Amino acid sequence: MGQILATRPPTPARGHSPKAAPYIAQLLTDWSSELHDAEHTASNISQAMRLYKGSGLSEESFVARLYEARAITKQRGNISKDAQGNGLPGLKNKMPYYFAVLRDLLGLKDDGHADHTYRGSGAGNG
Image 1 (cartoon, helix red, strand yellow):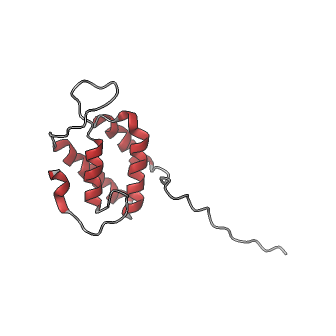
Image 2 (cartoon, one colour):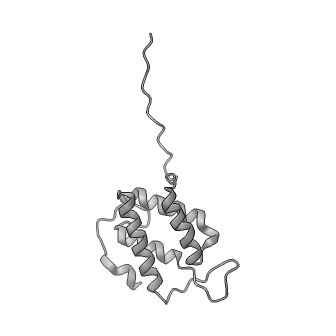
Image 3 (cartoon, one colour):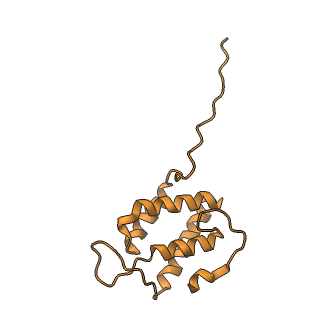
């Protein structure tokens, strides 16, 4: 009669991003502006969190990959996607390239799931 049934927390719906880790959210907020994609900051954070979840890495290891992808992205000068919004003319939106580099570093496909066919540093060449 006085038995308490254990309940487990509800499973998040598929397709929804996990709750943003504060440090990762702050990095993506800063870098969205730096890489000329500030108007998509919220979706950039969501994308990063899906990749974080899909990577299976600790937050520390994932953050290291975030920094590595940023360094590679900043070295590239031939990105052709123009920045949108109130930016200065001639600025390039580097976030799509940033996420391609990040997925490559994580060994993930575009859908955020493990690829298992690591492409090495090929992202830096595309």
